[in-house]
Image 1 (cartoon, rainbow, N blue to C red):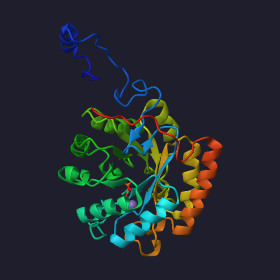
Image 2: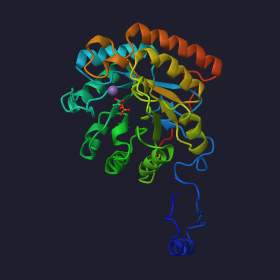
Image 3: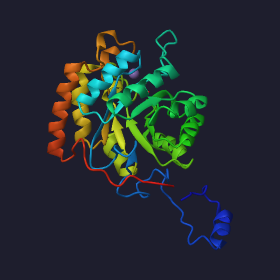
Image 4: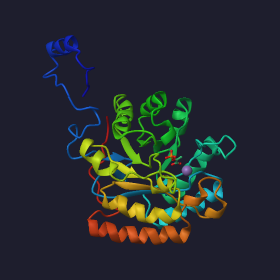
Length: 311
Ligand code: PEP
Ligand code: MN
């Protein structure tokens, strides 16, 4: 499927004249490829055969904000797996507001994350911050994250799209829903259909929370788009005390899953320490979430539709 630039009548006629073309359809949806019209039942994005985001089930991706060392990420991997997470998160490349803050361990951190994921049998999600890093990071990751600060970095979106890996696209904290969907369109238009959106809070006048987590974006995006939507209550609030209530609210609002900061020793975390769930909080939360999901009929480990095989 391809969409033509608006009003390209000549190209439409030329395509219609080709023997191999049955019909040229004009989409009036904008943005067209992300539109719900394209996949009315909603897309499922696979991170390997065991994990699909967007189906019947609910997926939790959890782990430390940053990979800080082999032992730390391995402890976190074990912890998140015990709480029923479907994938492990952790940043090797950290886009920090201040250049004086810990910037991550780079590709070495990404390698440690991959190793920790293998140890516990979980796929891994990590951020890419530069187009030139996309291929290298893709060799070690199962899903590439685009952070809020890069949501409209179009050359970066193109580079991650071309790896063919699933892309977790955070909402820019200054982006409208339409701008966010157009950012997704940059990946989809490059022939990579595997985009998962993630609401992570926007900037408002409110200063009591780090950002304002826009949960109304979840049902809104679900109406507009077929793409799965996750919610990140950790970055959205910046406060571990608000993570559980907002995560449960996100599940109730129809999100397909969550992205959560969990740390085995949050007091020593080198990045976003205030928002990371500590081990007991995480396991308590996982228990409460499982109960809510049972009530909602969205089990954590739901049977998946068939994994697409071959080209
Ligand atoms: C993150 O998830 O590690 C992160 C940096 O998030 P955001 O881009 O939403 O701030
Ligand atoms: Mn963080």
